[in-house]
Amino acid sequence: MSRRILQALERTRDHAMKTTLKTFLTIVAPLLLALPTIAIAKGDATAGQKKSATCTACHGENGLSVDPNYPNLAGQYQDYMIKALGDYRSGKRTNVIMANFAGQLNNQDIQDLAAWFSSQKGLQDLSAQ
Ligand code: HEC
Image (tube, rainbow, N blue to C red; front, side, top):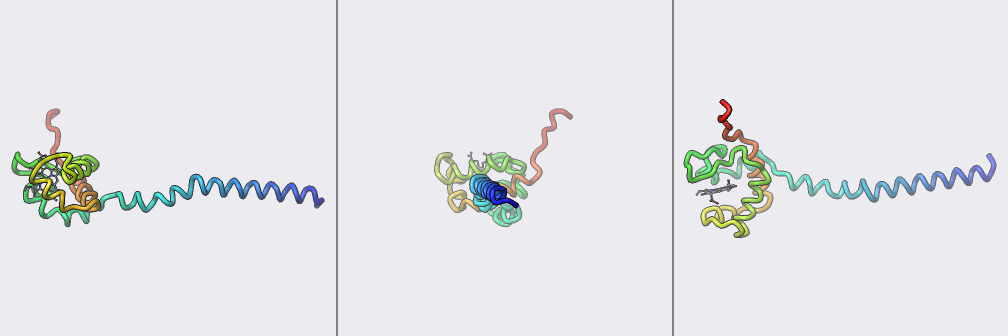
């Protein structure tokens, strides 16, 4: 092979490697870095069930409340409960009872509890029946 062709091949290979590296640094690496965050952010319903013993006293077994003073949590949207519990904890949403209970929860507890209650079968809309 002539020297010129070899040099051209070399350049092409360099370019291909640079492109691969660029793709890795701009797309793949940030995704890899984000993975653990996504994993942590997701609640664990099984862990949530274990943490829910105090909650069931008012919100009922599996989040189906038997007293109209206490809202049902079963089947509620997970992100709604995460927001509600965070707001009780910060004082943005005020309720003496829930401020006390939410104040004892860390972020992972909130994620887990929300995952557990949202995975439970909630009330059903019977209006069409
Ligand atoms: C002593 C009774 C009691 C206990 C125990 C209790 N809660 Fe509550 N919870 C309430 C009441 C009352 C409300 C309604 C407060 C309001 O009007 O904002 C409420 C509201 C909530 C809401 C918002 C519901 C909605 O529809 O907006 C969430 C989420 C919640 N509780 C989760 C929990 C979790 C998780 C626990 C356990 C760590 C827990 N609660 C323990 C009484 C209780």
